[in-house]
Image: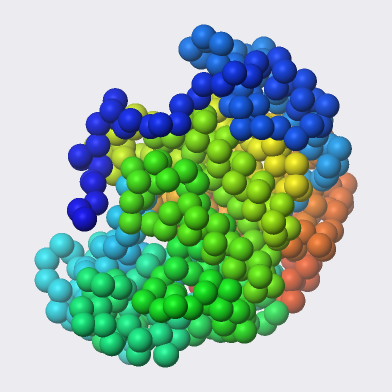
Length: 491
């Protein structure tokens, strides 16, 4: 079956069966939210739209009532702490053939092959960096890291004081779970077509196996947060292995928790438009249940603000809440506002932009009110910028992401808000709204309150090599003070 491209989509004729219409009233939904009752999907739709009773835009008075209710619930559940983590992003590869229309992170995997000419791709194994190894970056900006390069990146981060590495990557056709998986995939008559597999020797850089990458990044007592449901599917393709088995093997290699990304919108009629090549809703849920069954904590996400409507968002929240009812393994909910500028959906006119400020605020607020079994709701300075992210901390959010040190996915989609926040940044921003800055571990089980009356600069202490010194060197702090917010040494 041929997958639709963005150019084939008519934004006025997507034909969704689920639309934001309910028999509930906004007033009843708000009363239930204020009383702490468990909300229904219809309740959530009313709160997300500020009423489906004929209004064509967000009612600002009603919106503020929803935000107030969510902020009060946040204070009841987690208090006034605003948490953040000292972390590093280490994405292994941009090579991916999935073809998601909301993404500009990926690069067609064919462009990474040996003897590939044209399209700015590599034509042979070359030592572009002069270090005796093939270059991991192609002329078109894509990259693949070897396990050794991943280990080096994590080691450098540990020396700075970080204690979490987050790794989310493209679905490189040469990626397999382990050597046994390679043998299984090689056994198909046409593995490229049947199971999206080509052997590592076809590529300029061999990414290793998932097990090798996990082992490489799990060094020095760091917490490894990796392997989305989509990556777990890729790590079991062509086999009868269960998700639990896959995650157990990854856990043995060093994986500590799994990110619930690749969720996008957990309604298949939306997924068929924006990511027809990805696993479906049930596949995502099965993978998350498998991760928890393997003894891992997981997070949950929603990417919103593209083609979906408020009914889809509410249905998504219900599926997250039901998953948490079944497993109890979700540590946080992470709303991801769609960054549109360099994505196929925007370039082909399927969408004209992302979510509005009102939609962002209401999504976070309704998530806080609806997800009565998920304690932490995150906001994002990467997606929203500092000022707007601070506002959302008064809409129900309590977590403020992490230091990151490197960020590729949002940046390649057109994000404009930088790649790093220092502990000094966090202390200044959080105290400016009268809240308490708190360093946390990935699982939220260990925390340290920062005292803004102490003399800075501030730094992490929860990491295995963290001693409270700043993540940035004096030279990097000077460069940022001079107006270069992305000034971080290339370790």
